[in-house]
Each structure stands twice: as structure tokens, then as C-alpha cells.
Image (cartoon, rainbow, N blue to C red; front, side):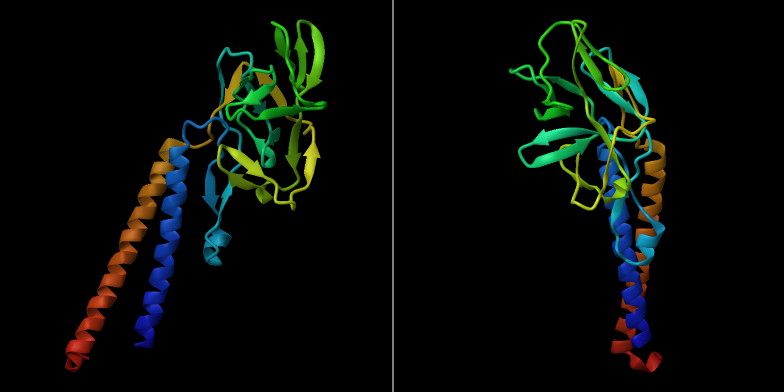
Length: 230
């Protein structure tokens, strides 16, 4: 019975890991069209230690032209800095616009921060340089803040395509190799084909473990009901 209990325990732990894998992949697929989204992956070490935590993959997503002058894509590492009612947040989503007060905001209505704080744009011709410098009607008004972190894996994902710094991630201003592209947006870095393959693998492993638990359950039932067989 000790061997059976140990076997069941191992199968249950393995089943839970596959469940987390399925949940992680499902979330990735759900955000296939989310601008600037970074897919989550489970690391090998985490599986071995049973922590079952996912971490973002910060690799670059494809950049697509939109023609909208308020769309900005980050090419390279880093994040836009956003002022929200909950405090500072970070995002890769550069789908921006102006609110009623002509403040540059994201799709959540939260202000994108520049060197001088929230950025106000009053004019017609808006130009954003690769360094984030904003010119309105030929006059420089501010520069969009772009920051990176020494270890961005310490950031925590939050709803609305935000990341929050729990206080452990050290901020690095102005990553040297990062540039902004006006009228472009970074797409999600989720690969549909790859995620579907991972999903099938997880489901197969999940089913195999379920069958293992059922087999042990049947064997235990026979042991209890007809001990003379063993």
C-alpha cells in the first residue's frame, strides 16, 4: 500500500503540473492578438521543484505598420512607463491616443509618462523620434520615457497588459539598443503553431496520468475486495 500511495502521489503532482501547463498555454492563446503581449512559459527548474510558476518570455514580437501617428512600437528591450490610479505600471503596448485634455494616454486611458510627467500634445503635426523625442508642429515638447530592468523576470504581470514592479526589480533608464517606431505596433510574441503543439503534448501527458491513477484505483479496489488475488 505504501508503494501505491507513493505512486498516486507522484501521479497527482504530475497531473497538477500538466494542468498548470494547460492553463498557461490557454492564456497565451487568448492573448494571441494582444498588442505587446509576452507569452508565459514554465521553466524546467520550476517543474522539478514543483513551484509551477510561469515567467514571461520577453523576446521581441513582430512589428506591424498601422499608419496611426499615435501608435508606437518598441524595437528592443524595455517598457513604456504609465501613470495609473494604482501607481506606476509598465507596458509594451504602444496603442496610444489623446484624452479630452490632450494628454497622451494608452487604451486604458492612463497617462504615458515623459521626462516632464504626463505628456500634453496640442497641435496637428506630431512626430516621434526613435529616441522618444516628441515634436508638435516642429517644436519639441517632451520625450517619452522608456525603461528596462536588470532582471525583468522579477516583474509581475497584472491585468490590462501591465507589469508591476514589486520593488525587487532594479530599473535601468533608456536602454541603449531600444528604439521607437512611430505608426507601428508590436504584436504578441505568441506563436500559434508552437502553442497548439504544446497544448496537445500537455493534454496527452494529462490523459496518461489520469489513466495511471485509474489503473491504481482499480488495482486497489481488487486488493480490498479480493485480497486472495495478491
